[in-house]
Amino acid sequence: MVISDINLKELQEEIERMRLNLIHIVAKKGPVSTEALKISRDLDNKIKDYYQYKR
Image (tube, rainbow, N blue to C red; front, side, top):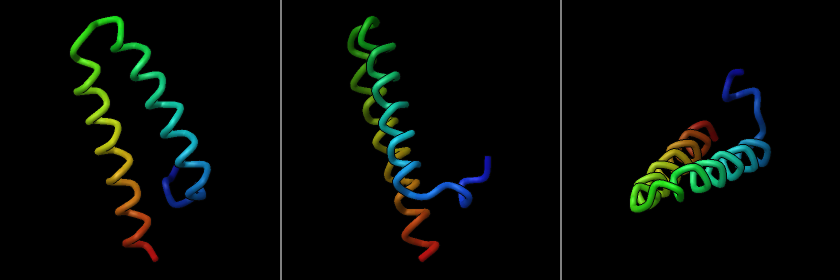
């Protein structure tokens, strides 16, 4: 799947699903969840930056 083939809304929905899965998985392991949240936010920001650059 190529990132440019996905519209932004679909991409944001997929990121949110990934983020929720990540939180669910790491919540069982304790303080790692804050790191997982940071990683998911960083990913979200990088994708938003990519789309801003493409416009």
